[in-house]
Image (cartoon, rainbow over all chains, first blue to last red; front, side, top):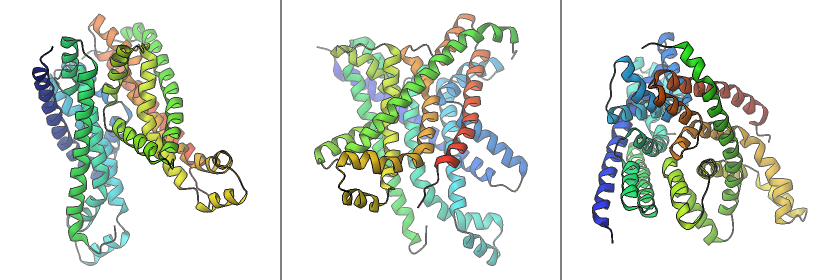
Length: 219
Length: 219
């Protein structure tokens, strides 16, 4: 009948693009999350205001609109991005805004006595954060970061609409070439689900590994 | 970049038509998600292991895969087995199904939060299962979850631009068609972003009010 193996190769190529986008978007999101999350806890009003504006803006407008804005509007003000760059930028900034609130919440959830202990040991703000607060807060953030990464994976499907050849885009190609809709879409649904399972499994094993040194510490 | 106010005035009526569909889709999707979520939460508590496991896995699967692909699936695959849906109906079903799996978790937490003494009291009063649910458990479980439910409905509202991919003429699609016919992307895309930002920022006020009104759990 039809050459399914060739079409399956096409879908695998799409899966690679989706994985690439998820990884690069996650890295950008992680950086933005810590910048904005710590910014919201800063002593300086300007940093707090900047971080709050970033978070509210990117959480308030939808990812789809941000992506189209990055891809279609930025060229008019002289910044041309390839679809991949626009995708990574929109995904990373969007999910980073959600994750920034996770960073802030986790740091604030660390008990006052830990901050007092930092003062008692004469640690500065930076050293206290680096050696006492963050190692404990990271463990609190991790499960929610895992959920955010899965949200990011799901959001990558949107980039197919700016002609980036990810899983969803390739499924559309296969659909238009074979006229079969059921097989390509069911296949990519299963692949997305498998990727989401891998992320949640990875985060859980990372959590176990990080919790190892913290026996007896109250989280 | 040049911002042209007369162009904005010219396209505004078209965009407002899109806003109507966006709001309609959100409302219908919310109603469907609220009902489906309750059904999923109840099915997962069912003593029938086969039913609760199957529903549990399906909900997990839907939550782990992108809404966009699910919309394609509903819109393109279902006609193959004889179910032809208009775009808006397919979109509402997709939104309701996807967010129903999220609201199911809210319902689950809300139901788990009802103290076990209430179940025992219902049993002591000789109420049957249906009476226990409708007169004792749900009236206590639902008010505290209203803020969390509203949060998901706002998230759903921000996902409605995805419906443009299955040819629903909502705000994003109107903006795209305006942009394509005049080849001006700056105004329509920015207006769409501003619209979503305004609605999300004002929804924060509504959420705070809901939290004050319903969020407290009396013990």
